[in-house]
Image (cartoon, rainbow, N blue to C red; front, side):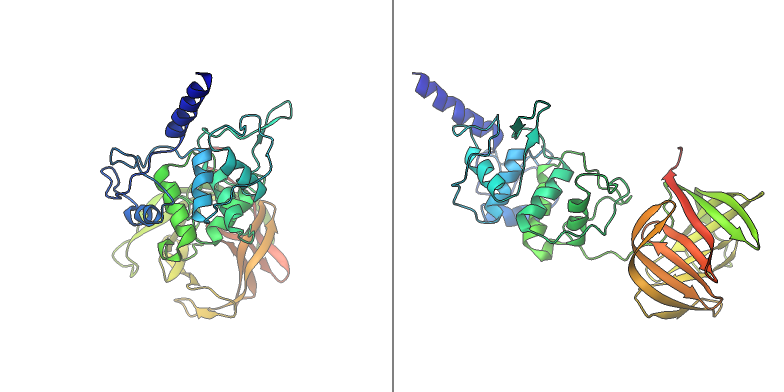
Length: 363
């Protein structure tokens, strides 16, 4: 009788942890990523529920994530050593898949304060954890050059998140965040796995932006006309240029304080160029696309040469990746970081501007 009861409990656990296979992909509750979900359903990598739903907003749990990735890689041999997890015994649902994933280096589990290891199979999978297990499943070459605003280099998942972005599997959010600690939904996990398996699902590469980040406060060290001082820049709001401008659209307006005076700085960016200036006195600062060796001219006819791209460059504010180096005909060289903008300007070997602090507005 105990054996029958145990068998029923194992079956019940299986039903609670992983949905029942549902062959049809015309789910009643799917409005986003239909093609990606269909792609995975057709290959029996991901399942729906027997009531005809997919439950796209439900959290993907840690065990489900492992099971899906093993299916995606076509793993059918689950013979593997015991991983030694306190909560995953040989008769536990999902044990074989977890043991295999540990052997393949896809997962490593968690550690209690007393040093014992566990897997926590029913816990929601976070976006950071998702990045790691996809990178480990695909054995992507680690590339830590891409940075998101909320993923510092000290984050344990930073290199995996960066690699996923470099591989085109993720874009992050429009505000250049990744939200690594947020639980990932079934729909988003399906999206990432489909992109992992099929390049056709990957988004078109976005042009790199060098516009200032409106959510951040910039503190700079300045050395202009023999005078040294510190200033700061904060976003004020949209700036609508007058009818005399030949550049349509909404500009960003920034308040620059310090150095004994206040001023307003404006920027505008589209797919062709980055414009900057004070009031209506603006000029083209960068012309896209940017590549090493490119020479371009501003609206006023000033020459600029792109000396380098893809640099790792350090200022007092930190280390920046994928930095470009541009020299003007006036002899000064400016370094720009993606999604940050100018981080340092040097003239005759001496810095005239250097970013010394970059912090969220309000701090």
